[in-house]
Image (cartoon, rainbow, N blue to C red):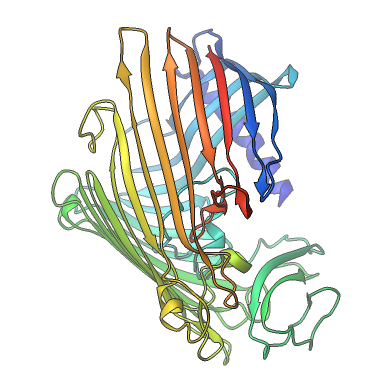
Amino acid sequence: MKKYLLVSLTILFAAAFVWAAEATTATPSVDVEADATLSWGVDLGTGNKIDAKHGFKNEASFGVKFPLITKGDKTSTKSDVPVYGEINLTNIELKLLSEKDNNAFRLAGQVEDIEAKLVFYGAYLTVYDSPAFRTNYAQIWKPLATNKKYKTSEYRIRPGVTGMGTKLGYANKDFMGLDVGLKLGSNGPWDAEADNSWTGEWRYFDGKTALGDDEYINGLGKGYYPPEGNYFVRKKLDDKAHNSKYVIGVDFAIKPLDKMLEVALTVNSTFGKEYKKASDGGVNFGVEVKSAPIDGLKLKAGFDGGLGFESNSKFVWDAIVTAEYKWVSGGVYLYSPNMSSDPGAFSLNGFSFKDSKPITDFAFFLQFATKADKKDASNLVEGLDAGAHLAIYQLNTFLNKDKAKMQFPLLFKVWGSYQLNLNDSSWLKPYVNVWGETNHGFNGIVDPEFALAYQIGVAYSPVEKVEVAAEWNHGTLWKNKYRSRIETPAGFQKDGHHNGQFVLSLTLTY
């Protein structure tokens, strides 16, 4: 795989230099970004004793960019002839870059996407990239706070397989945006090499399921029945080359009423039970319907489903419905058992305490938000950035809690800030954020608690690019989690609770 990636990148950047001669060469310039922060803070620690830690902190970061190619898109098409070959490069960018902790310059470049196809009077045959034989129209919304470590793959059902191949289709933007295509792919190239590496994933076991071929938990392999719970399963990848197995699919998309109604559909199936491994063959399908009937209103419904060809395979599925209108948005997400691969306390998998087995579950969210920028569709008052978010996860688990000690599942955030412009170059912005959740520390045995965390602060900019801030935080927070946002709840001299943190900072930006 690394070889293919290296070859692809080489071709892409070579192509980028060729196209650069046609008005993509950047005007010589230097783009410098930098910021430095001096702060003094005190953290009162956690628990029933005050263990104050305080001191200064210096932080800085910078970036220096010398653009060689202006970021943009290029296509190889040169005329309006009905038959042509086309290569599209999306977001080409090439630059010299110097970053924090690295005084040397390095060459940094990207091509976000590359597509190559042969077009014949509206019909087309894709040459690169390979078509998708998966469906993911029902991806759940993102959690309240994310960073680069957030993985959508931990919270979704995305049935299907990967492979290499082509798509024969027909597209006509003037006929309701029609795009329909037949896909054909294989589980690998004809010259594929064997893969002797290992992989792994978190998986739920019900206590009645044994490990399969080349699967291991703590050194125990095939035939071992793990006790009920979530385990990290190591799996040895096949020591044979992947090729000679095929998959077929159909994609269909149309906009019969332009933005009023958009429909997309995909169906994929392997030829037999075996594809890249003995039991991954199957069929999957998905459908998505979107509508924007009036300005600012967006409606969406999506469904994904899949079934393996093995006799003991179960149909997996998830579905989502969302709506958004300027300040208000909301959604409902439903999913079959074992959707989430995120283990333990953060799993979204439904579970019946009555029957001690996984069950179908669902989630809701409702949000009101207004942005400070008056150009934003949700703006109510210039300078005001405020909102409220309410979410309910694993509601069916709560309805099947039996004697388990579980509170009604609830997660919320309320926030607000207002920037008051004092003159052309100075401003004052007070802000507050409050988080709350039920079932904090839930394990089904002891009583969970309602947890609270909050942040209060004020920022002041006396002149441009200078900012002074004073901030009080009470409680610590997780990122990338759905049904739990609070790591350590606010409290004072109470075991397992955060006593608070105060930070005073000065930030300069360039």
